[in-house]
Amino acid sequence: MPVKKVLRMGEPDLLQESQAVTDFNTTFLEELLSDMWDTMHAENGAGLAAPQIGVNLRVVIFGFEDNPRYPDAPDIPTTVLINPKISLLTDETEENWEGCLSVPGLRAMVPRYTHIRYSGYNEKGEPFTRDVTGFHARVVQHECDHLDGILYPQRVTDMKSFGFRDELEKNGLLVAQPCDD
Ligand code: NI
Image (tube, rainbow, N blue to C red; front, top):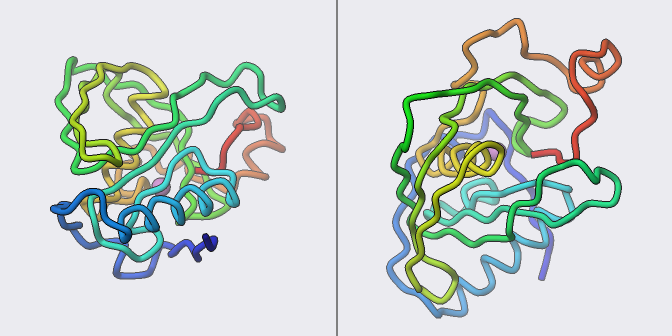
């Protein structure tokens, strides 16, 4: 399956609200997910949302297992999440660095809720729910934002943190990260 071009900020399709998936177990969905995994891996991302490859459906993928280059990065199970719903399990937020394959080369500090419950459907159309914290919760909030046409720069509260990854790293503000998204 081909690696798709990732749309970049400035492309209006990234700002659309995406549509719910109504048909599971279709060749279309299977090929979409295959393209998304191939694209995410080719771009070394932590997650990808369907609108980023130009498909405005409520489908996200994320997760990675132990990357030998970054043994301290937390594992997140590889997950297909379709028609997601997020509920907050805390009012608490924390700031941490984010990047996005649609905003290449840049990083900023983004506040996210620290403890969430998410539910949705896997690739077979089976429902599931998880309670998660920390980086896992952050990745899910970032990817699900894409389905509502929101890119992380819209969430940045301290624009002074917004910068180019290589400059931030060179200046000791950002520690080298395992993923580009
Ligand atoms: Ni993103």
